[in-house]
Image (cartoon, rainbow, N blue to C red; front, side):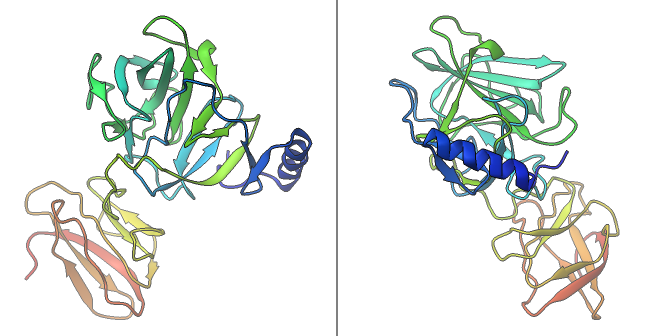
Length: 292
């Protein structure tokens, strides 16, 4: 199942339906409803770092959302933050939702986070107070999930500290509603600016070297955890993140198809490095110890 773009016919039908309902359109594929959130609903934000962009999709479970990084260059391991201040009300494993968290935001409002990569109590504990700057987990593929994404829900229940899917309500981020059957929003920017802005290379999984075509750590063109990339990587400029914590193997020797090589001398702590502008094609990658 592709997450990148809906069929043209479906997009047209959604657009016509949106116009008929008198709603606003975003990106031509999903509807951001003009109606304001219900009174008393918290000012929920995307549960990701400020300024990062994400794809949202309701698939077949509107009003819940499935979320991946825009273009889905690799979402696994991306930090997940609380959508608003609150208290962790549940942290558990479920065969369907995998590692799962619920946060109580007060006045009957809750959020739920499915398929987290780590154990649900890896970052927070039940009863812990959180804010939008609190990391609660990472995007993962646990439970019945077969691809790395965050399944996200906003819920309302007047009483009780535990909710289920029967309490789901349409999702609002930054005061805008994202809902509708089989709707998609391919580029939504997080305004959760209480969360720290990630380093450009932060999306590279530990134990891998990632090369990016953009100077801001965007546009991944090669990710490898072995001594050879999956294919040649044409670059104009690149950041890298060597996340291998094994002592003596925190450096990477890169050979170029155009000739020559370069040793990336940074480990996890610094986690970054640039190739000179002008274009390079990575022909080989070799893990090793200190650069000469």
